[in-house]
Image (cartoon, rainbow, N blue to C red; front, top):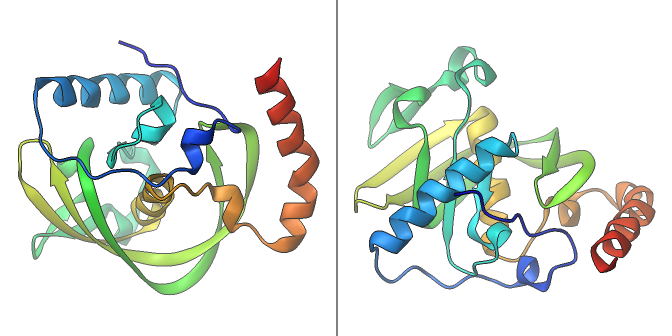
Length: 186
């Protein structure tokens, strides 16, 4: 079932999310619906606040053609594996440790339609992700997966990628973001 994607200006996007305390059929169904919604919107990640729920849950699916070379192989629970082997990811209560060289990359967001900007983030992440079946994945990755994990987990803290752009970019984006707010109110 397709869910409605919460848009810029909705207060839920600015609230730190509560941990998920237990997994049940309803949460599993939510995971399936979030993936379906993300695919329909042509995204690669979606966090629960983006569908109106203030819980620490994320879905990610990096298409195989988006990762090449060394970033297509990641370390999962101490073993090198193809990134594709863990996709799609549906997880709760993530713990992230970004590290490495700071790099700029263009980001966009399904909740901030039509706006993309350069965002600087560490180029690697160590993450502990709990899947809905209780399996814990300890991942060390770079590339698009590292960036997507950081972007989606920012949502769980009430942050948007627009909060992380440079001061100059904030000035440039201000009018466009204001227009998005007006569109929401209409």
